[in-house]
Length: 215
Ligand code: ADP
Image (tube, rainbow, N blue to C red; front, side):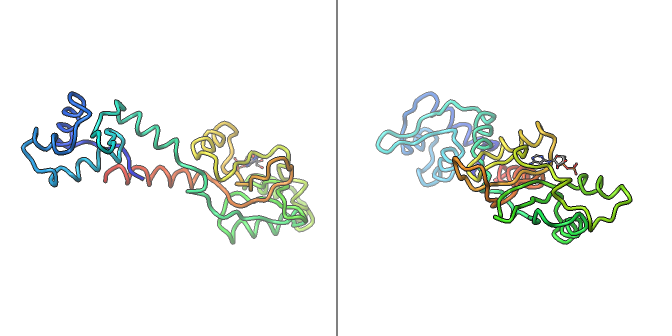
């Protein structure tokens, strides 16, 4: 992923030249700056990849008119769920609360997805769902997870083609930590779980983004 960057002096000058005179060829830009075309090549590559300039064969470079803030927003809005999803951790609907707690620790996740006998999404279990169930005096092995889980159709989901930013908005809006990524089985109401997106995945995207931006 290539992101908008802080331009150096030479890149700023190139942008100014293209803004005033574009469309203009690389050769002509090099002449204006008293440099060779080869010297300019890396700068022109950076400016086109990051979206400040556009290049058309036999026409030359022209200015896109986009600010770095606009370019950054565009890039963020292009990230898809499939680039950041993790594997889902699931338990069977017949599992008990004790088993679910063990799975949560062993798999080191904060949210479990519950599936039915047909391996389709039936519910979601969060840490607090399990804590709440543990607060009574009941034997945890005797409580099935399907009586404490948040169940279908009240589950917030996404597909791998969805935009990561839309999932981030859902996490905030619904005040949840994770969503299952389901296979897009349009028209069906039984969903196969193929991944998960959590606040951690979104934090990772943010970190990748800032390190890419330094170039
Ligand atoms: P915690 O309860 O540990 O703070 P969450 O904020 O993720 O974790 O969960 C809050 C509540 O929302 C829980 O009852 C949980 O079952 C439910 N929940 C979690 N994820 C989802 C989801 N994707 N769709 C619907 N409900 C969810």
